[in-house]
Length: 544
Image (tube, rainbow, N blue to C red; front, side):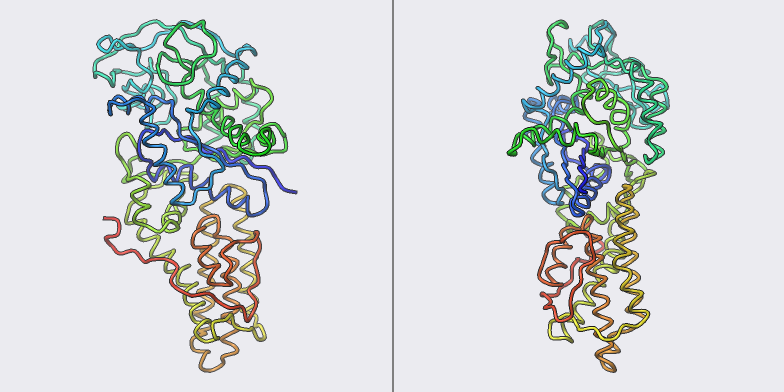
């Protein structure tokens, strides 16, 4: 039976260009996963959007001297351009500025308030006397009380990943003036996270397939979990749907951003002929939901958002949160705000889309931080993608087209080594499927490339280029067998390399589409398309 799968992808701040750390952290993995599940026949809904309400937006607006909306209107189209260039297949990529998102956020707020999970209390927040403004968390930087990192943000430390209360920072400083802020009393709503501690602990302990670093981090957070403010003294964001806090208050971005997965599904359904279709992924307990995020988002998606869903009572909890660790550049975490790591757009202008997808997919930081350099990208494209897969496709199809009248050769009697290589087709698809189902995407790619390496070894052992002069029928059998496995590997690589999958399909039998997760037979006598190299070999200065 077809499974129903929600692919929920982290919402990037529309405050500047995205970098390869973003691509490898959430957006490429989610697309690989969604493409596979669509191909095997599952009902996939993949949603995300630009986060328009966070303080990174207002910080950028202050820097540029424009409104927050103008910032989003500048960068949201750029982000959409990345997805188009790289084939990232969202069913909907929206923003948190929509009326729909504001309404859904307010509905969740009221639901939690009615359930007794939101409480008002007076607290201290940093205030910049010179600017005469309360300072949202990201307007304050200082030293992390846990690891000593001197540039920790007010809500989270980028170095150790711990979520923070801004008032815990050591030697805090205002990003507006650089001066030391003072504490000033203000009233806000708080989410009663401790009320969910037992349920969260039981639920997290029941997860047997989650990545260890994700589950352990979540369990560690549940063990020491204070109430968390969900409103702030800011002017940009979702209005608080009750008026007992007074003016100048908005819903805090971390609260409204995770609701975006739900609001995006509702917005998507409204564009179809069934406005209630979103419920099939959110209220049907047989549906599955996978949240693709970076490790800095683990607390929000494994503890805080599940607590909100528990408080709502009618919505599904996450099936898995396969959070990736960081892609680093010379040991430093890629950072949009700090200018570490070039933008996705910069690379997309210089590399074939599948070359960039391959280079990132081959180093996905699923278990550990992974360092990446331009030299690594060049090496992986040239020595792996071009030399192994591209070379296999080109030499087999060129030899077949040139020596067999532009057709797939007719096979003769099969030898034991032919039978062995033919078994690679179905076996590779099974192996890659097993890995993708477990969100082991890097291993799935490696399995497909290993199969290509085995076919190359088969060709080197049988030498069809020599057989062509001595035993053309035998040469044709070898090439036919290689073509069958190429056709299967092409299917296995479709989630990773969709653009060149179409190109190779046109070469094989004129069909650029992939028709299901199965090894197709390319019959002898099938007319081959125009054969040409699939990938461009990169020059040493290609990324200078």
